[in-house]
Image (cartoon, rainbow, N blue to C red):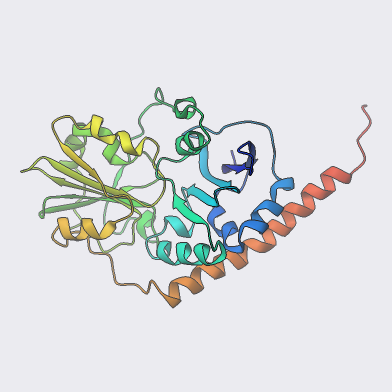
Length: 292
């Protein structure tokens, strides 16, 4: 399947060009070198007018050259990791001086809306819901330093962790309670997960946050009729406070150590891009194969 992303360039006259990349995972790392480097990679991308939808778009970047606006989102990469997100944004902003740098929580739909196109075109409203399994403490999927998981707390009494490889549990609405009844209890979640949901049963209030983009993120309130729903965007600290410490990730260095980790990931990506560009150049210059 590959990992796909749209790259949109809005020119100074307001017209836009649509490209497609097959390297969405870590696309935020490509932004560390600034706008000139991103524009230089455009000849390597497919320009086919294909807008990726909510399911297919695992990342996206938009450069508005006239207004100096950079929009981007991703499902994976340092910008979607709790320990590295702040450092990734700091490094990106340092190389995009004079630009507005913004994260898109609703992904592909927000890219289309920015250029004046109907966001509904990329919605997948008929797609089946894929409930995320709840994982027991010690599950191998949670053994990574930055696990793709969703912490779900109920008041200050219960804490559960779901896999992040499926639909966010917040999309299940009140039916989520049926599954929570049998979900493994974690007591306190100390993991550096990248999403969370907090349920306050007494006040019928729900707060949730997500570092990766989440399709239809701003439409979650309609899935919870009778509840007050707050989208905390990337403010995971609000979850820590609301849960009374049931979600309490282990302390980490968000400064120099995190910046070094992001730069190391970028260094690992450079050789991959070099090989990719060499393959593209070879395909463009290789003589056509005569038909048999």
